[in-house]
Amino acid sequence: MVDFIDMDERKSRQKVMQALEDAMRSDRAPNKILQFNDFGLVAITRKRVKQSLERTLCSPCPYCEGAGYVKSVQTVLGEILQEAHKIARAVEGSDVTLRVHPEVAKLLKSNDNDYLEEIEEVLHRPVLVISDATLQQEKFDLV
Image (tube, rainbow, N blue to C red; front, side, top):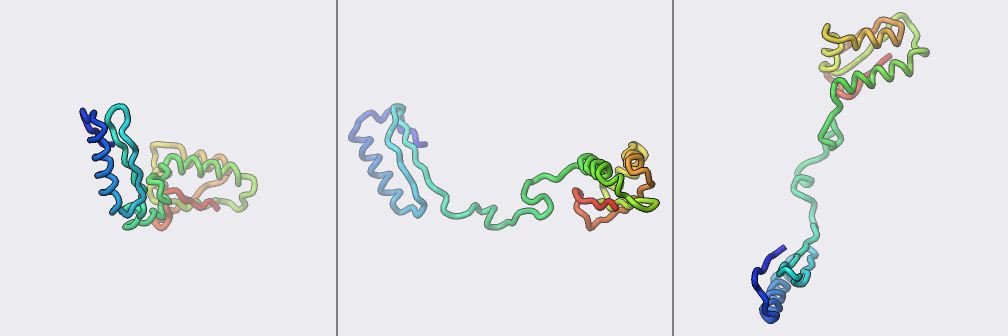
């Protein structure tokens, strides 16, 4: 938006529009110049032809898949508990192994909560928590 304050003469407005159109001809991006409105404003729009610099120089994060966020440790623990409920009847053997990211393992093994006890109660078995730094924080393996 360009504000041409107090430009009331029609002849002056036409000259300005002509000058803008001439100047924009050399622009490679498709553009559009809208006529003066009642407030003396002229709108100029341009279409982006190339990708943004960020998209050109970067690629989406493989960890968060370009979202910019990852699930919190508490959210992952909730998903582990949901998975435990799903597989509880099909689990065989005397114990269960849970492979998780170190941050998740740290909270599971902490004495400040009952997450691990709750998972063991659902599965009716002891759960061996294995910290695996190769796993993304959102991923886990419950077998």
